[in-house]
Length: 159
Ligand SMILES: Cc1cc2nc3c(=O)[nH]c(=O)nc-3n(C[C@H](O)[C@H](O)[C@H](O)COP(=O)(O)O)c2cc1C
Image 1 (cartoon, rainbow, N blue to C red):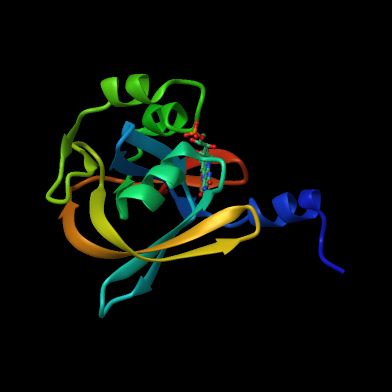
Image 2 (image 1 turned 90 degrees about the horizontal axis):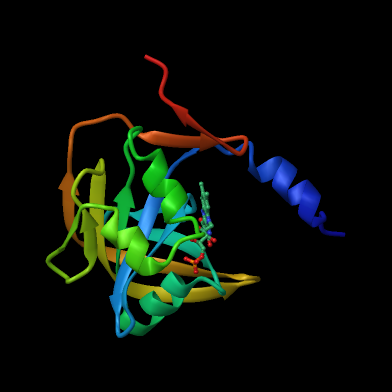
């Protein structure tokens, strides 16, 4: 028998990760949401994945446009993470964040640690989430320290 929701949360919050904001540009304009479910998939071809709730507007935008960007946040971007995790409109989220249109036309954050612009190569429905696999077409890297998430709280790397 499978574990219940509480057991799932208790265990999965113990997985430490970086924090990203996944963005897309669709017919509804710029969309973006905070996501820790980012993972490297393949180096050749260069592929990554994100898992997005089926109810998330950004997921719907990606399934429509077949393009997206992953913006990996710095330790100074906790507020950006909170803003893109809900409670404010898409207009507010993007008005309060410095960004530009990348090579694929996706919103790329100016001050993040790294940005990856991707085309969708596979989308798999798994329970409540879409597993979206993207091929990286363009990348930007900057100096800085990462924002981390562990045990339901933001963390930073110890020196
Ligand atoms: C640290 C953090 C990590 C999150 N990671 C994910 C994720 O990987 N996948 C997901 O579907 N939602 C994730 N969420 C929740 C979404 O960011 C949030 O539900 C979304 O922005 C709200 O949906 P909306 O953009 O449609 O308003 C995360 C939230 C936080 C605070």
